[in-house]
Image 1 (tube, rainbow, N blue to C red):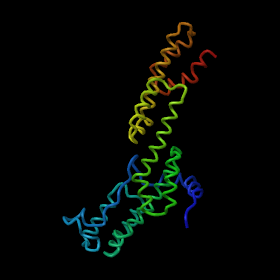
Image 2 (cartoon, rainbow, N blue to C red):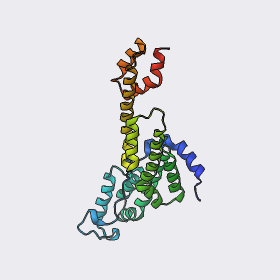
Image 3 (spheres, helix red, strand yellow):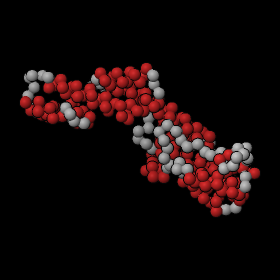
Image 4 (cartoon, one colour):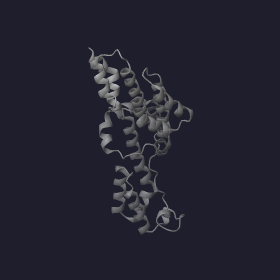
Length: 249
């Protein structure tokens, strides 16, 4: 039965607190790729299929999966059970169990992304579509490439919105235009995470300096501006938005 879009979003909201504690960590731009079900990583023969692996090769392959810090709870659980079982149990884990356990963990990771209040419309749309598809391949494709591209879409919307802010100064406008001239997921994300804060602080510092250049301001406003001009980006923004009006109130 297909999962409806509404049900997915409701579930993501309800499960978000628990998923944040249980989901495997994913990097900003990539998700871990599953290991191959051959002896390539444990023998000199990269073409050895799982059915021809020795018991030692099977055990080493599973242990390497367990050692992967990106392996989630489902993979860790199933891998541990396989190691405690028979040789055939280990083969079966590498044949199909790993794929299904990874799917379980991938779904948890996608729900976690959906439950993130900072996930934008593009990310939510693509995440829901991946869950609705209901296949390991769709979930993995979203985490490996779809999430990065969807967040890039959302980031560009957010950056463009910043241009419309009435207090967007020269530095902010210049840096945004540079990104829009040659946009990449990396430079868009870096700007939103750190670049915007620093660029806005530079513009705000210029704005405070202009206040100080006005010979007609009150002594109290001058003192407050002199105190804040070397402050943090947050202090500068607060002063320009609220603090300066409180001084002379």
